[in-house]
Amino acid sequence: MKKLNLDDAQPEYDETDPEGYRAGQLKVGPLIGAATMAGGYYEVPPGQANCPYHYESDEEWLLVLEGRLTVRHPEGEDVLEAGDLVCFPAGPEGAHKLTNNGDAPVRMLIVSTANLPAVAVYPDSDKIGVWTPGRVDNIMVRRESGVDYYDRET
Image (cartoon, one colour):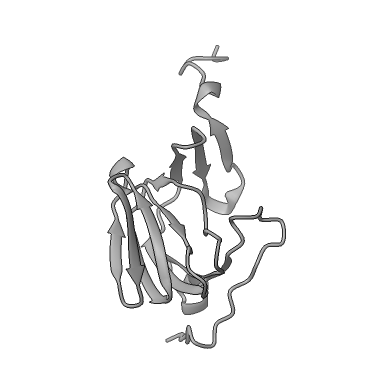
């Protein structure tokens, strides 16, 4: 059995993330030997979000470990506190954006199924992302770039 203590874990920051989206992340699944589930441990500084408003093809669970987190969702906004657990269902009804509007860091754990390929839709920017096994054919496109099913087929 592999074990990870989140109190000792150190999320990593990507210096290329734009202002407003500078959150640290640690992919925990590989560290505990997960094969069919994915998990991300996040640290979100004040004024930052972990990613843009989106929904996915997989269900996600969010557990707030520390701090106060503002969740934008299709019905509006709610504030979650340490110990709060929510589920974002697959599809548009599970759309969400997680922002720290407080003055102290937020720590949270997000767990989901790890089905590939996976799809995420970003309604605010009208983008769709597809993630594939091995990440060799990942793509992010705008809906307007869509082509007909038979485009370029012979």
